Image 1 (cartoon, helix red, strand yellow):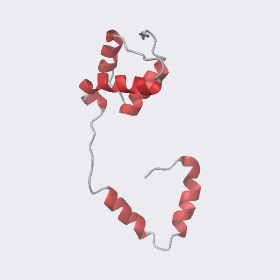
Image 2 (image 1 turned 120 degrees about the vertical axis):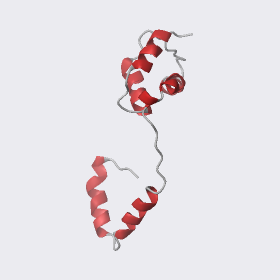
Image 3 (image 1 turned 135 degrees about the vertical axis):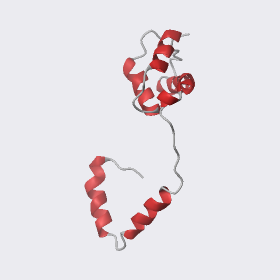
Image 4 (image 1 turned 120 degrees about the horizontal axis):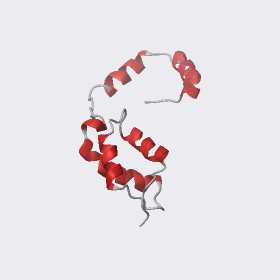
Length: 102
């Protein structure tokens, strides 16, 4: 479960009004029973080219962008502090200079 900060006061108020707050503890227990560990992208460099291709298709599907080999090598060397979301942010913020349109 996740929430945006702007709804946090309402959420806390709602949780305080619940007659049995221990239900939330049970929910947390159930969610944490099967951990899924996904290593960061810097440990899965071979995934980056496929992810870049997929993300470009989602970010700008009408433009059919491609990343030049030199830019792809730079992305693979970059120690992304996050995961796929960070890679998407890097692609969006970069404005994809040097990309070729077919």
